[in-house]
Length: 250
Ligand code: FER
Image 1 (cartoon, rainbow, N blue to C red):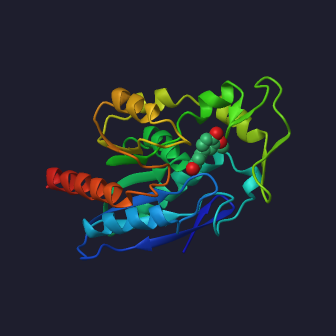
Image 2: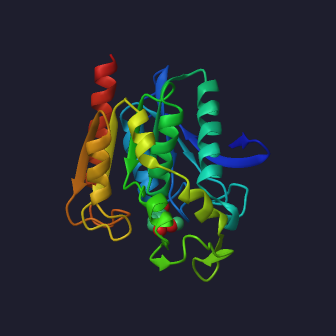
């Protein structure tokens, strides 16, 4: 299925809950940097949510998966705009009651930022291992373990054998202040983070938990950024939290 964000076509997968009831809540799920909507942890989280009676909408973001745009040109602004277009689309679905936002890593940070922008339209947030240190790191001249001069941004960065990233990614990231977004969102939040994450320090999950008005924090001992060892604990946490939200909304 295609969702239009301006002239950019985003590819998304809508899945109805296991036991269909109408109306039902819908959870938008956003992958991370270089990720896509069929990653193992994205599919597992979607399935867990479908078991609780939610529909899910897994989206390929700008320059990722089957969506339009070049990876080189993606940044937190075009991803944020994508997220808002997807919320508009979810709003237009007549069978949907409440809308939740869930995202992994860079998608988790987008969940936090879009949650603030859409505070009146989003019933809850599920940032999973949110990479919300990216803006602070970008201001300090760090990205993906590489060092650059934050006042003289390079035209592009090499990410791997096949990918480069425009310096504009850093220019955008440097202007973003995630703490402000955290303060703007008063609804319920579930943060999940692996304690042995080497990509995003677990301290950021603890800090976000302190700053949110109303959050639950689930730490997964021994687990990594993409939950290589205990994905079942992630899905258990997501399922239990969503069941509590839906019971409280009754
Ligand atoms: C970074 C650290 C983490 C970064 C991106 C990430 C672009 C995101 C990882 C992910 O989404 O899985 O410095 O720079």
